[in-house]
Length: 221
Image (tube, rainbow, N blue to C red; front, side, top):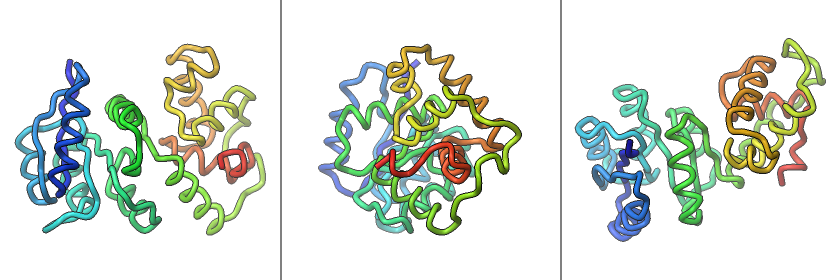
């Protein structure tokens, strides 16, 4: 089954380039293009895409405002932001709006295609630069807890290794390839990590792992 994609950007050349890139993938189906936040909401409700690729700064309604409305109406639609901004105020806003991922506009075509497939399968995707800044901010503002606090049991060596790779921005598929294990094994380990750390997302698990001392920020820079 093809992945239905809606492209949202106020720059015609960027939309055209994105369409040309994505139409090369046989499992992608471009269901529409929107030029502003209001049109994005309307087209999303009409076409019900699996994934929306959206800019942040747009006329009428910005991407964050549009994402909040779309997520309420279409909770199963994954929203992937593609932006030129790595400012944390923007990033935190889009995460709060329910974004499944964020890439900077200097991302390669392969990275964008991979991110679309990742968010469609339920993964979260953050550009490594964005991820690092987010983690730096969290650690600076909240500090670290001592290892062993806030979770039911300690992570195994393999779980710690997987969490570290996730913090570096690797997808489940990339982690599986690097560790020479199956994708199912990686997902099982992540489920165990989420349960032990008491969280429900990769980003939250990384933050909790940092606070608990399982992984370090320096290893991700």
